[in-house]
Length: 232
Image 1 (spheres, rainbow, N blue to C red):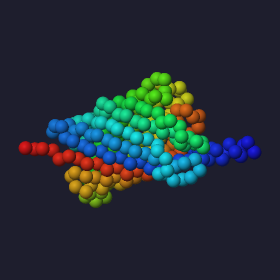
Image 2: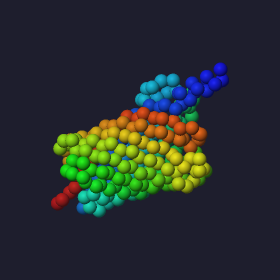
Image 3: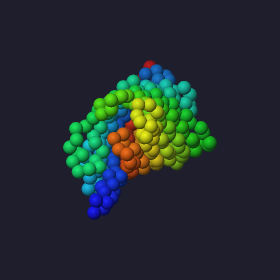
Image 4: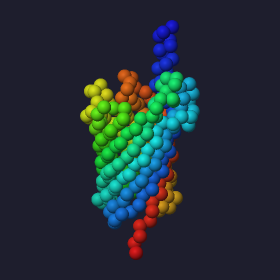
């Protein structure tokens, strides 16, 4: 009986369903420089359902500075980011746990290799330093995204990618692996100002407080508004 109860618990705990929403406003600073302000909200299902909109998962505010070196290379730095994390619901009552907070600083680079006018290889390594209220020390995490982008129409792109996250300092060696995301994304650009991204992510995650991995199905909607540059 105990084994059966344990198996039921793991079944609920290991498969999660999330919905992510993000809005970004990008403002030009100089010919090669832009700054972006990002707001994000994520939601999750409950313990005994598959409804991805039921409970809070995360709120985020983040600022980015972007430097466009050339057509195929962009460097980015996030001088400040604040996250409010809600407990990933794996047991009954987890939705009532007090949320934790995080401050994060990040550096990243975006590289593109063009195979043709329609196909591109996209490569994005990044490093981030995390200060979590739930952790006694800061965590240094590396992440790397690799994908293929296809320009289907003049205003529409598709991207298939994989992104690996590794904790390289600040955690036990058993949590060197953080998580891995495999995703597909459709981008539709309405004009030079507004674009919409819709996508799906399959994530295998090892939470810092757990000893076993959980699997997540996440559906996301991202909206970006780019303020036109003043050329006068």
